[in-house]
Length: 580
Image (cartoon, rainbow, N blue to C red; front, side, top):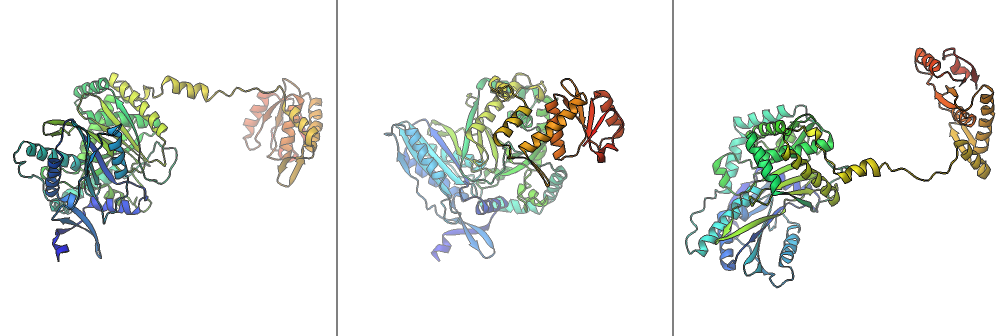
């Protein structure tokens, strides 16, 4: 009875949670489904009050107290009445590198497999790096939190902690119950809006293109994390913001457009589909409910080399606005509608996620900096762009499937992308096809180094090489064609005899001998004989039209034509012939 009373309610899973459940059940055992951040606090923290803030926020947010149970009719989730978890406080201030020590612990924790039935699905820890320097580690399984919820929860913890340090009440929680998300989802899926959204997406992808990838191979996800980070300078970001202001677009739209243009330039695919993560929370009250709701919508763009970045930015703006209007229709449902689930097919494998600055966190008067640690394993490539509003530019993370990419490959793509974005910032009216994606070193590598085939070759000829092989091993097999096998000695002797005949017909240097024979041993003998005579070789395909063959013979004026009785009657009359 006590076990039953521990839980306030038993609820079904949302569509987003169901998708995450099956993704883990059927994914690689090494795949990571955790979202994790390290929030660096620039000031002293009271560990006791901080734990109190975590516990109060945890009691306010149903989703962090969720447990999953398997029943005969499917998976259900329960919300515990209590918060049965611990929050480690770890002092790393005496370590040679406190930050590295803290991050080592964090990475070990977030990469540890999580059982959906036993958890823990939500974990926090506080690290002391110095008397005035702390790190808050915040990790949750994606089935209970999305990125939007992470920010919502972090802001509430900061509010509660600040109130506690000031000796005042943190105020009533504005979080909505988890059941509200499920009620809204049920209402949406039975509404006319659901039907309109479905119709919109089916119309968009009635003639869907194949998903593209920057990877040169296709393999299953092996799990794990492969992340490569680069930064876009503050000067370039300022130029992009000016472009945004002039074009009436937002910075995220410009970043999406510039990244899409780079992907087009690298792949050459003009019907480009990329994934765009969305909150899927169109209603204001849903934006106060912690939980897993996030969706991904396909963004389809028509690309061409002569379009300018300005026109692409406008097109991206229109298409993003349209996609946002229909963001609640789940990608899993669209894949099912398009019969992609049975073959594990996708509309996109590359995702662009713009994380705008909304983490203005303050803990008892002390500012904080948020560092993303993990967004989970990816099937292919996810490009995350973080704008923290600190005037230090943008952080760009490439989170990739380690089975498809290497760190060096990601770094090269990032360097080209940054150059590409900077070129757009300097002149957004320039055609995207005119922007060079290679630097001087890469261009030299492609045009010079990879084409450097110079090597020492002894002065010799093909006939000399054949005769040298005859002297070494004349009995070795030189040619096999159907039932015919010739040794080097026999091949050379037959070619010598034919070469003498050709020379008698006038063959020699600066002369041409035409050859019209099927693929056979005689063809190889004829080629070698022509080389021995010193003449050039004119191939004639007997299946060519007669007028074309006549033109070739009249234009080349060979000293003779080597052919066979069976083919000779199909060739036009022209000059001397030598029938084999």
